[in-house]
Length: 78
Image (cartoon, rainbow, N blue to C red; front, side):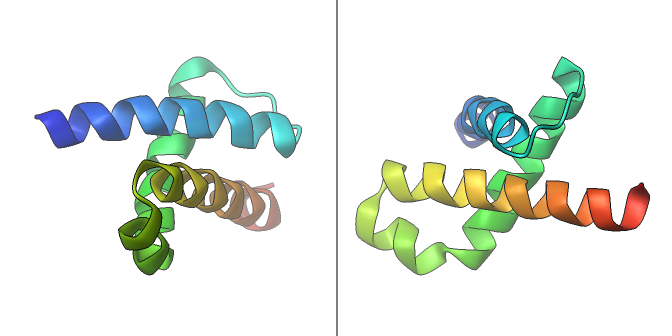
């Protein structure tokens, strides 16, 4: 439960930041979903960074993963 709550909070913040950086207008549930997906993708891609830097690494990975998902979404869904 605590892990899901952390993923939700970090994902919401990362999704908000990533959609602003990538200039994507989405509704709140989509923004949170992008951020949560990005958090998972970022965690997988940046696992070593997380181990070394803790919460900062988690946030960097979440934003990076969300930006990757937005890029893929724009490239293949639009």
